[in-house]
Each structure stands twice: as C-alpha cells, then as structure tokens.
Length: 633
View 1 (cartoon, rainbow, N blue to C red):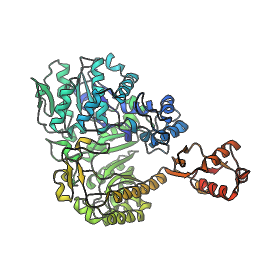
View 2: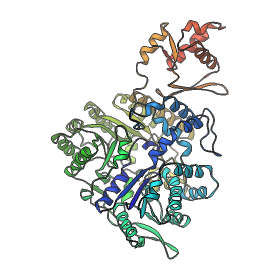
View 3: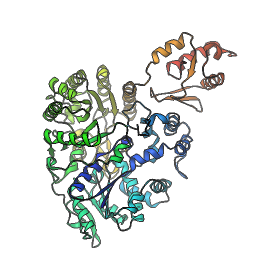
View 4: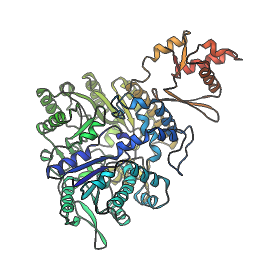
C-alpha cells in the first residue's frame, strides 16, 4: 500500500453515492503500480448522523457539544425526528445504504439534518475558525477519531491525497489534514480537487502558510501531478516544486508551478472502484469520465469550464472506449447503474454510445448532464432510452428568451419545450435545474417563465431551484456590467454552499428584495410539488381521503408527519408531500385527543365533548387534506 485517497465530508447531496474522483485517481495510480487505499468519509458521516444517539440528540436540537442548540421547530431538528421514525427505510435487508435521493425514502432529509455541520465561508474565515475554540472544529475531530482511520496507521503509506470536490468540504478537509498529520507525521499530504482549482493564488498561499500539515496543493487535472508526487514520496525524493500544477512551500515562500496538459481521456486508465465501498450501497451508481470541459462552453454564469487550465477547453472521449470501460465495470462489480462524468453529453456521442450499448447488449441504466441542443431529436432520445438512459439532468434555467440570450444559452424557450416533450415521450425522466433570477430578470419575466414551466409540468420528473449568484471565475463575474449588474463589494464574499470565496456580492435592479424573495418562494413551491410526485409520495392518498371523508376510521400518520408546538399554534411537516403548515392552536389538542383514543378513531369519537362540533369537522377536513389524518386499514 503506498497511497491513501480520502474524500472528506460534507457533500450532503452525495450521501448514498460513490463520488468518482477517488476511483478515477485510483485507476491512474494503480495502473502505474501503486497500491491504493480509498476512504469515503462523506458516506461515513451519513452513517454517523443516522446512529440512534445522533438522531436523538439532533431531534432535540443538540447538534454538537457546546455549539448550536436549535429550536425544536428548526427544519434540521424536524428532519432528525422524522429520520428517527423512518430509519429502517434507509437500509435494505442486507444493511446496504439507501441514502440516495432517487430512492423513495425520506433520504433527502439527511441533507436537511446535516445543515448545521456545513460551513461555506471565505478561506481567511475558515482558517480563523479553525484556530478558534470552535465547537464544530472539535466535533469534526471527534468524528475523525470515531471513524475507521486506523488503516492510515497500519498500512505502508507514503502519501495521502485529499479530494475537495465541493466548497463545503474545504473546512472539514483542513481539519482532516491536521488530524491525519497528527497520527502519521511521516505521511505527505496533498490537497486537490475542483474547489482548489477555483481558488486564487493568494488563497492557496494563505492555506499553505497557516497549515504546515499540508505539503502540497494541486490545481486543475490531478492525475499526472498526483502520480508524480506519489512516485516522489515512495522514493523519498520529495520535490513538489518540480511538479506541474503544484503549489508548495520552498525556501520561505510559496511556489506555484503552472499546470501542464491534462491526460487524453481515451488513454486514461479505467476508474478503480473499491469493491468494499461499492458493496455498502444499495443500487450503486458508478461514474465514468466522458468529457472534461463543455462542448458549448459559453454560458455566462458557468465556471466549471475554468477547472482545466493548461488543457484544451474541451476534451472528449470516443464512444468505443467509453463503452469498453462501462462493460469492464459492469462485469467487475455487477453494477447496473452508471453516470456520465460530463458537463453536457454531446448529441453525436449520445447517439453512437447508445447504439453501441444496444449492439453489445449491455444491461444497464444510465444518466447524464445534458443541455438543450437542437441536434437532439426523436431518433437520439429513442436510442438513448433503449440503451438504458433513464434520466437526464438539464440546466434549463428559464423560459424567457431575452434572458436565455443574455447569458448565452444555446436554446430558446421553444427549444426547451420541444426537448422536454420529445425526451419525455421516449421515456427519459428529466431533472431540471432552474435559476429564477438570472441577471436583470424582472418580476413579470420570472412569473411568466414559471407559468410556461407549469404548462410543461407533466414532462418534468424533478426540479431544483438555484437562486442566481455571480462567481468570480465566470464571464459574468469578469464583466458584470455587460450583464446589467454591478459589484457591491469587490472584496466581499457571499454564497450558498458551493465555494464562498469564488462568489461576488452584486446589485441587480431587475427586482426588489421582496419581489425576489416572493419569486424564489413560488418557484420553490413549484419544485416541491413536482418532486413530491416524483418520489411517489402521497400514493393512494386520494382514496384514503375519500374513505376518511365518508366516515371510515382514521389514524394519525405519525410516521410521515412532525407536529411541533409553536407560539401561535402548531407547525406540521409531512416528509412525503413536503408540505409545511402553520396551523391554529386548536390543532394540538385535537391531535392529542386522537392519539389518546387509540390506533384509530372516527370523526364522532373526536367530536365527543367538543363545544363546537363544526370546528372539529373543519380541522379534521384540514388534517385529512394535508395527509396528517389518513384512513386506517
């Protein structure tokens, strides 16, 4: 064993999956003769959060000792209580994880519960927090002590590579670097991944100066630099300043080597997925590299095309070599589900790959990111569906032509509608990403776009809402005035959980603050409605409602609902429908009476002793309509 590859927490959207960066790097290292240990701490964090003791503490608002104590009605605490009631659904009969959000389980609540552990702050703030007596820092250290990192002590290792794919991983990754060095002082530690590639050089320098535990930071394509560093570490000839794409201390200053060209994808060794990590997952999905960069590469808000400096803006792979790797992984791991690692699958590749997969009889399911492109037609979608394509993730963003043109999207609103209808007709599920407030969007434009989306709702399997944020490394971030916005604070950082230091504070006069909030709320409600339908939630509820309304026996669906007292009444959240309702104070005694009667009851039993029977009838109707009261078996 010579190299440990570690995927740190926290990528809450990745619970229940095997992030491919470890496997792709491991394939390159193994091909060169290195023995590789892979550790997925993100999945171990999900396991840790689902331990009964963790759920019990979080259910009461206690998320880490000496740290945040949340209100009982906070959604993270609500999620913990619902997960505690439904924990068995997140494991199959063999104990394998069903944490992926594609499962018809409350798994999506894991990411809600995990929010208190998520830190997305600028680099300087993360380093200051690391040095302060911060309870969350100690919580992560305790987590690293609790999980199985003993292998780092026991194995014959010379280097540890830590892959920081997402911004929220940076804070725990920095803690992890110091922790690993404390148990293995002789181990060379290399930090890399897309988050590091989006950093400015002075931020890299700040990290390396503050944390001597980190020997080197690698940006952009990681295969060749990591291979060179692993060879140096194994030969005890450590000279990272000679490696392309590496940043490291040398003679009291930080050296930044410019990146070299990344590997040709057709010659990239096959990904090496660890059988033990694959075996922990129910219905695992394996990622296979298809492209790096984007064949369109012009969307003004996108910064993913900035991740491969030193290489061509777009590198693709032949369908034949791609099918060869899929076939290899299919037989090696008995895997049936694959994802294409790409910014957007090109139409010509999609067709040829699908035809080859059909010809070779590959029994699989696959999905990919795609952009709306006029070159996709019915022939493409039908071949893709026959080959096993069950979903596509589409950056639709908006249905407004002015805004699509402003941010240089390829498609028009009519193109979007055609694409959705034809892909849906072929049987491909469409997971659509929307940005309701692209630069200069007016309230009327946002609502008109939503109206058009609602007309297409039957063709959507899933919707994700991403409020717009300008990033420094995008076209918009480099020339904001061209897109109708201004930078409010050139030195300030803002952001959601992607990477705060890459975000810009902006002023956009298209909508007022209240209008923007209202638009986001309306779009979020639309997404919740679509997603509840996709997850199969509320199945048979219409029949149950009908029975209950006609006088049958009723029960409280305690497994689906969290009911919390508030100052003004009761707050109810149903994980199946994702409906959150602030009801009147009279609901609480009604629900308590229902529970006291027994496992089931009738309307008449609830109304016994009530001063106003009509009020009871109204509240029962509301609780039935909101799936809190359902028909008893």
